[in-house]
Length: 398
Ligand SMILES: *Cc1c(COP(=O)(O)O)cnc(C)c1O
Image 1 (tube, protein in one colour):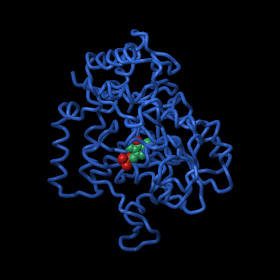
Image 2 (cartoon, rainbow, N blue to C red):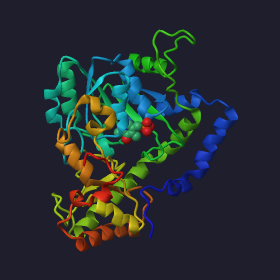
Image 3 (tube, rainbow, N blue to C red):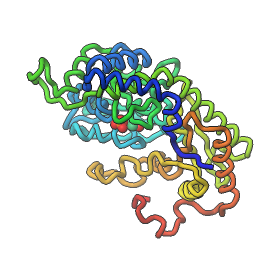
Image 4 (cartoon, rainbow, N blue to C red):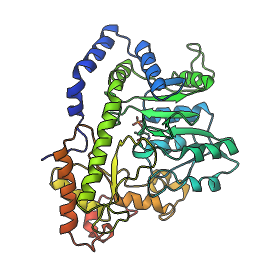
């Protein structure tokens, strides 16, 4: 039995007619950049995330970048974020010339450990970028309290969390800005790159619209330097056509997550620690986790991945090298051990297939394969005891 990490074809088969019609409409209009399709999509996403304004952009990455540019954040400024995220979060900070300041994660949710933010605030701090990792929101009450106390801008990186909720509030609806990605593997994926920024602030929305078109307003008059961060009409049309299905897809992911939890428990594999024969399951603390990823923690992660691959099961590590240990951020001077929770998560976590169209038999195959691996492998072995030859091509910081 094959269980790919993600099967976009299975989903497309259920919505082909709607997506094809949406694409055909754009082709007939020959209106490809911004325009009515993009506006329609912006309205729908603003509404879906309980915000007044939405600005379509070229990617989740450019969404983050444009927000930092809109706040004139640059050299000499510090932006607080997590080292355990997709590169774009930190890349955007570096690209505007600001300094990323890391705060370690909570080992249970993998989101920012909010108790550690306050001690990192300095007179240079301008913003905080909390990331709602894997589809579960970070503790935004704590983030907003710090933001209010110190006058900091909050940019929610909600690229993995569209529709997630905490205390009844949607991802992207709490900070000054919320950034979404429509990268195809996200829960609401386009047919290429795309992204969106939501905000309640009319002036910020206007500034973002100006920045996404090279800072031009009116046309060919530039008060500021922006970029080409525009959303394509084709991408907007695909996203708009898929949006009405998002809640049922989210329900499917949540159903699969519950099923995994149940199967791991039935087979006696779930534990809170990463004991040699148990698995730490995702812990849901927010009230709507949308499970962009279902991430477990195991002590012999790399061996488990190999074993699952041999059984036709796709997995992925999000992310194998935390940002403070990336070569390009070497100038920040962080050493191994600087953010221990992020480093352990990078060594011990693995994402299992969770997409909504998975069958119960597939879920069972995944959990049974993990059980077989855990019961057959020597329990003393750990990632760090791998022979050196197996580490070739792997990050050297391990
Ligand atoms: C996907 C992702 C992004 C970037 O989105 P793109 O659309 O791929 O540019 C940023 N942050 C996080 C946490 C992501 O998962």
